[in-house]
Image (cartoon, rainbow, N blue to C red; front, side, top):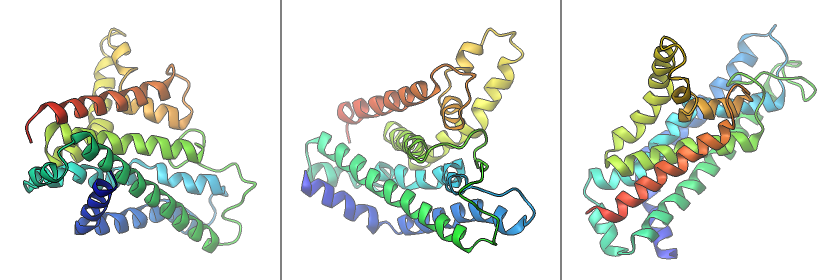
Length: 248
């Protein structure tokens, strides 16, 4: 297993786009969290937790999903998956190694993002940020706890990872979750409003709608966190079965 982890770690950092995506994520999160502090000098005082919630912006997760999609997408795109499976014939080891390394990368990026936001907060004009302020959530609704941000983002990254493995297409692994979260679910919710409540049950189980509700503390949905992570587990399970049952 150590050999598989080492192999995957080296593969991750041998792809130049990993560095590009990492820098882009930190810059993006810094801008989302920092611009309101420096541009609107008369705005409400932000809290530290509110500042750190900038990392829950879906744009940041979309950027990190590029690395998640590359975990398998890069190998299928360039025909390297056969070499990987020749080196490590037990597919469960390959799958676990990729998930584990992706998890370490994701955790490092989240901590790095919070560090950048902390530095921005320290440099912000006097009075713009305070530990005593109520704070504003970058995602809307109540301020999520840091562990919620971490868990929600990990769910999104795993969905991108799993979709890539199911479709064997790097671009689809990035685009499908993004379009579903930003466009498709909103269109379905709009159409459902014309169906006189007959489609409300479907709207209420959509994955990203529930993920957002759980993160923002929206109580309109029943157990949104449970529904969101059930989707994550289900999609990952389908990807696992396909990986083990299909040819490389």
